[in-house]
Length: 75
View 1 (spheres, helix red, strand yellow):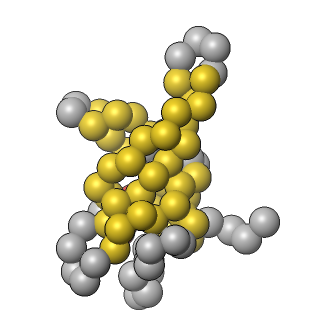
View 2 (tube, one colour):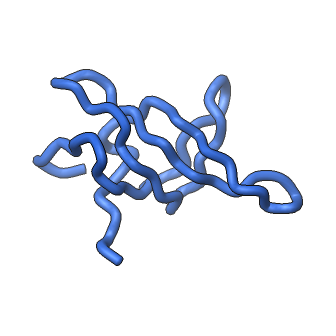
View 3 (cartoon, rainbow, N blue to C red):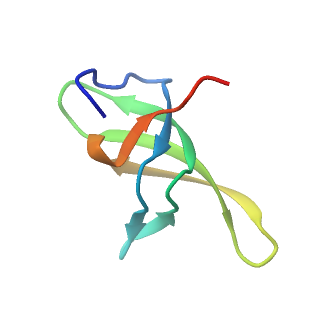
């Protein structure tokens, strides 16, 4: 994500698909908010993703690596 580590509350975007295996899938381009960023420990991000045939939005909160996210563009 560059040289500046994100802080709690920062808006981010997934730069690649995250998850699979034991983690829920978060597609590339999904928007999220950092909910935990303490020291050099793991980052926790809450994403809102659309799942299922109907496209129901669902919150997914998971640990991510800094290279999996980037700051979201300002809207």
